[in-house]
Amino acid sequence: AHSIIQPMVSYDDLSILSQLIDSIYSCITEPLRWAQVILDVVGWVDAPRGFLFTPFHTPDVGGFQFNANIPPHIIELWNTKYHDQDPWAECGKRLGFYKEGNIFNGDDHVSFKQLASTSFYQDFLIKQDTAHTLCGIVYGEDSPNDLPPVAIAFHRGLKQGRFLKDEE
Image (cartoon, rainbow, N blue to C red; front, side, top):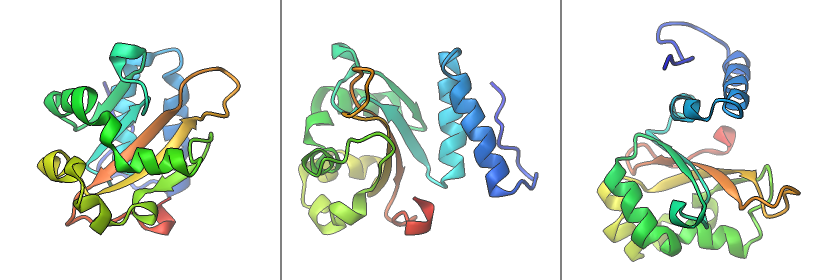
């Protein structure tokens, strides 16, 4: 697959965003393009990893996942052990965040101190250098199409730091 993000080419942010949106829409008819599109979006938000997924439905119960730079064994661990221990997802659900179009900065709702005290972080996230998340809701609990919530999450490590307000 060919990336739309070209090194050494200077595009303004709106042009790149427009290309990314076009690429996302193209995935409707070409779902195999998701892998490349997720990589492109992850690059645009300056995150080393990203995940388009159904946060409350793993693939074994009808959910789906497309990821960028997350090893298969980490995805398998999330599916089999950690998906129901995610403090960001729990907080989002409790706050009614899973509405179409919402943006959720994990640091605004679950402090790093709170996150670091969980086994989710200590046994899972730390192994992949994930300490911060920015999540957008593609389809929410309020979507008229009866689909489960679909989110796109971007992850950063401790050294890269949290997502700032102007990145949301």
